[in-house]
Structures are given as structure tokens and as C-alpha cells.
Length: 270
Ligand SMILES: O=C(CO)COP(=O)(O)O
Picture (cartoon, rainbow, N blue to C red):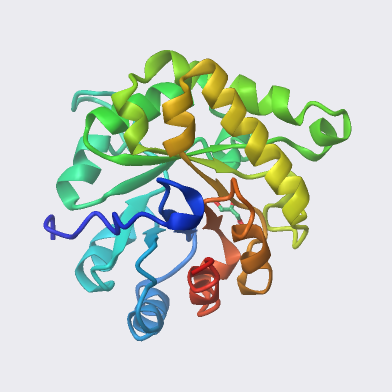
């Protein structure tokens, strides 16, 4: 199980050094039987374009099922990990090292649903940054999710919010760590709502995020780091989003639970 490939490393000419990254976030969905049907659909969905890396992030309990039965050109990941570097007395937690040991390639960190806390105390930006560092140190790649709420966009603070989520990350990562980071820009108001940022709105924020990385981390890293869009992305809107110069992929929720996920995968510019 641990010998699964890490995914495509083919460079996409449209995006300089950046290969597209399409992630599926299954969130807290699925039974063994439902997953089996979806896995079969994905396994029979035809070839993945060679300029795209694909990953599915499922619940912890379903990781062995996906690792054992999902086609090997789709990497498998988790949706969170513990912040603790060492094993120990952390009841209910799953460590980054355990995910790596199992055969995971990716982990999502800082999803807005976790930052919000499901009505309870959520995860502060510093905790998300620390988890990200622990995950990278354990050998995982991270989709680091950021994004503003509706009222923050309306107040004109979108980039200030994104910067506040990236600042603690920039403090803990080394330059080499950034090779294993993708930034998933997910405007909270677009998640699960059917409201998608227009390609122009998304591009504007992606460009601003890349500029922030250039100014605060380094120009070379900004050119390399992939910035995924997430928020009601599906087959019907993927092509125009993915055609934007700073949109390097997607992090897909609802549509990743359907065959439509492959319309997103196939929606990357050739
Ligand atoms: O939260 C998301 C992915 O992490 C996006 O969810 P939806 O695609 O369902 O809007």
C-alpha cells in the first residue's frame, strides 16, 4: 500500500513550471459500499491528462479502502492531521507520520470548516500553520486552505484575510518545504452553496495571493507554488476557471462525490 506513486510530475506549458492539481475533498461522506461504487466509476473513467495530478482526500477510516482499491494514478490523502510531531497520549488524533506510513501522499490543512470549528472552537491560523509544518516534516504534501467569508469580501478585506492565514505559514516553513505545499483558495461563501467566484474574481485573488507569496516568501517560490480554487467547482465551470493564468487546479467538494469529478479533471487546458 505504501508504494503508490506520488502523482504526475509532468510540467504544464500553460502554467510555466506548475502542473495542475485537482483534489477531491470527500469531507465526512461515504460508506464502504458508496465509496466502492464511486471508486469503480473513477477507476473506469479513462486516462488522466498527463499535465494533471489528482488526489482524493477521504475520512481517516476510509483511507485503507481507497489506498487498496482506487486507481494508482490518483493519490490518496487525509483531511487533517494532528499537530503533534511525536506519538503519544493524544486520544482520537491521527498523526502525519501515521498517514505517511499508511501510504497517504496528501493532507488538507486549514479547511474553512475546521477553521470555523463546526460551531465549537475552531482552528486558529497558527495551529493550521504548525500542522502544515508537522505534515511536511513527516513527508506529506499539503493542500493549505485559505479564504474569506462573505462579509469579509463585502468589506473589501479578502486579501487581508488570506494574508493573515498565510503569515503564520510563511514563518514556519523553509524554502524547501514550499515544494510540498499547494495553496487552496476557497472563498467560504462559495463552498457548498452553488455560488462560484467568477473566473475573473477568482483570478484576481489568485494573482494577489501569488504576489503575496512573491513579496513575503520569495519570487521563485511564487512562480512554483500551485494555487487551487475551491468553491462549487464542477464540470460545468471548471474549464473557464482552470484557463485563468493563476488558477492551477481545484479542490472539489460536492462534485468529487460524483462522476462529474472527471469532467473537472478533463477540464484542464491541454
Ligand atoms: O470545500 C470545498 C473543497 O474543500 C468545496 O466544496 P464544494 O465543491 O462542495 O463547494
